[in-house]
Every structure is written in structure tokens, then in C-alpha cells.
Image (cartoon, rainbow, N blue to C red):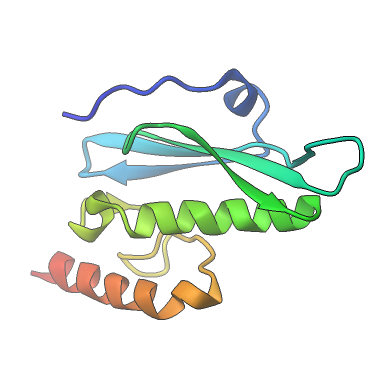
Length: 130
């Protein structure tokens, strides 16, 4: 049984995006993305916080960029990596109903991780077809 996770007020009260995934058809996993914001008055670094609730420790993590758009993109890549490389996904337990294939979570994948994610998706698809 997975532990219940606390949810940060700043993410759930005012998210710019959320997505629910199904975990083993019994529970849901929620991804929440906060709005990017400058870390200081100079606006030389931006953070975009995100949280995955339902697997892992539910910690608030962040994407960091030189502007708001880069911070948002990095946060989305981080979410993608966290989910595609999770034990739950690799065991074929995590799905998104809107996916183009049974193994698709509908998240962007960075160029550097594309081949690894393709391989993992193929393994998950093979698991689900058994």
C-alpha cells in the first residue's frame, strides 16, 4: 500500500496544469505543475515547482531555467523522467487513458532520454500484451 502524501498549498490551490494517471486500476497518481516564477528581483533564474502525488515521496521538486518558459519545460521533462523511470511505470502499473498507446503517458521527453524512454515504453507494451 502506498503512503498518502501531503500536498503543498501553492501547487494545488493555483496549479497551471494537473493530470491524473491510473495506478494499477486501484488508485490515482496526480501530477501538479505550479506557475514558473523568478527566484530574485534580477530575474536571472526561474523555478517551476511540480509535485507527483501517489507514488514516491510526494516531494515538491522544481525545474530551473533562465526564463519562465525554460523552467516550465525543464519541470515537464523532470516529471516525464520521474514517471517513465518509476518502478510503477516499468512494472506496467501506471497508465494514462489519453495515451496514443497503452504505454504513453502523454509527456514530453528530452532528446537525451528519448531512446531510453522508447525502450522502456516497448517493454511496458510487451508486458501489457501478455
